[in-house]
Image 1 (cartoon, rainbow, N blue to C red):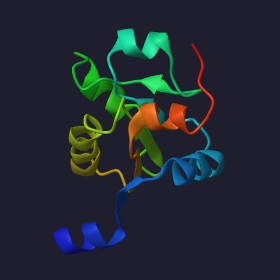
Image 2: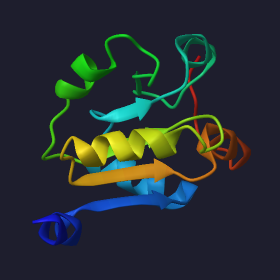
Image 3: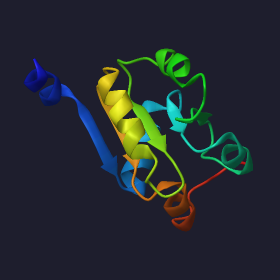
Image 4: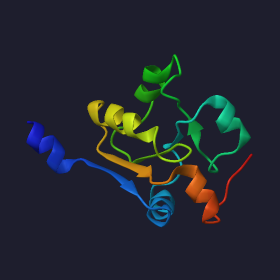
Length: 115
């Protein structure tokens, strides 16, 4: 059973270009910024929602996501996304893309943000 789940799950860390490409394909319906709400309010990738691992309603917010659709996640530099990727894997999400280098690299590569 574990083998079959792993064979069909696509959970990976991707470059800024690949993340932007997947965002174009999947849309921002499940684009998640996992930074704190304070960080999120300062600036974010347009269309993202904020679901922090420290949010008391974390599990409730996770349950509102569609497991059959891709989930795109990011944090500041890519460290905090690792626990989120594990949580999404355990929750049964099939396609998860993590922005390698986080929003910091996104900004350095000239990609759009909103504040």
